Image (tube, rainbow, N blue to C red):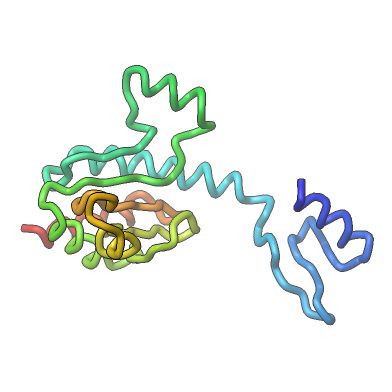
Length: 171
């Protein structure tokens, strides 16, 4: 609603081209909503890829658990269907080897970026116990074996290949 209001106000001043997702500042054009029309397509693609990656990870011996709404079973399927339009592109992976394994995998990814930001067009991996939650008291910190994976727009094959070579570092 706020964005629509902003667009209406700016459009009246002839400073915004909503269809192109741009506004002009002193003669320059700046993207404010890059590829706005394609957001739904991007989310669908990332969601589809995340499902493939989650299923692949669930069969790996190095992985203790994969938490992904698309892998839900039983009553969880109904809950996901009621609360969500789709399972999304975020995964939580628990590795069998604890903190050391999670750290090794996160740092061994070559294409997947080890970063704290999640939800972009690039696939990102985060080890919360080593990054964002390191200063948090141990009792409030996520488990040491947890990795968060935000699936972007790369192919499932490319993501899986990168995770496969990173998991191979645990051998």
